[in-house]
Length: 91
Image (tube, rainbow, N blue to C red):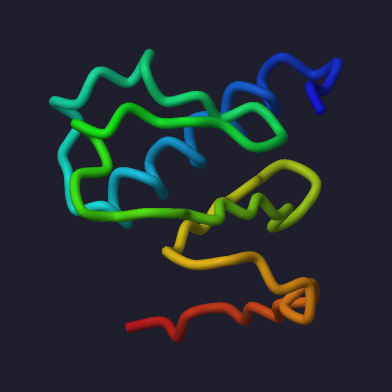
């Protein structure tokens, strides 16, 4: 779903792309336009995924001004619907 808030949508999509790149171990030299990150299922060119098969990308709100995303290989299991996060300790 695309938000009416263009800034929020930009960060939602960019955090998804970053999560995918980290999950597949590639840098930003990948053609980012070839990675679709709108809601739903998409095919990704095999030259990007290489040996990987299927990824799940989840977006989440950190607070009303921040979003995040995580990507992992596998099949989506909605039992992970609620994922608590806590603040990192100050060093």
